[in-house]
Image (cartoon, rainbow, N blue to C red; front, top):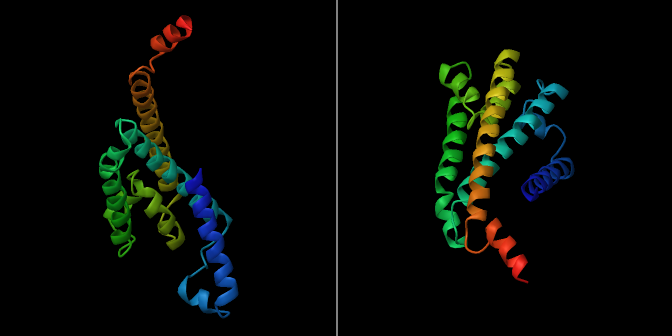
Amino acid sequence: MFGLIQVLIIIAVAVVSCNLFLEEGVLGEIINLENMNIFVLAITIIYFLLGYFCYAFLYALTGSTVSKPEDVQSANGPVAILVVVGFYLAYFTMMDPTSSLNAFASIFPFSSPFCMPLRLVMGVTSPVEIILSITILALTIFVIAKVSIKIYSNAILNYGKSGLKDIFRMYKEK
């Protein structure tokens, strides 16, 4: 939740800064907004939220496997590498938006939140690709969430004296 609020604050500051400090027409020279419409904005928000949930569940999955707070960073290392690989896969495939590697990056669930909105703005994607990509990303989130919830609940219930049986026993003793 706080991550989403942080991103919204960054976007708000960027919009206010662009409106206050940039001369008229400068933003239009940097970003081509011809293909931007409500549909593209909605799909971009959907990809942002799905990508956020995908990586949040991955971080929760790896974080739930450790018992000490000091180990969380090393446990989350593979997820951080996956984020970087997904970002760079999308970044470098943008050089040729019609390539088959770019099409793969927009369907692959760990790079599609980065790649598909850019392909949509460029106008090189079809509605079938968008639906397929969102479906694969949503299914991936469902699987990761199911696994992470199962592992997290087992880790919490099996750590120290916090198991369900131990809680009932402690309650009966007092």
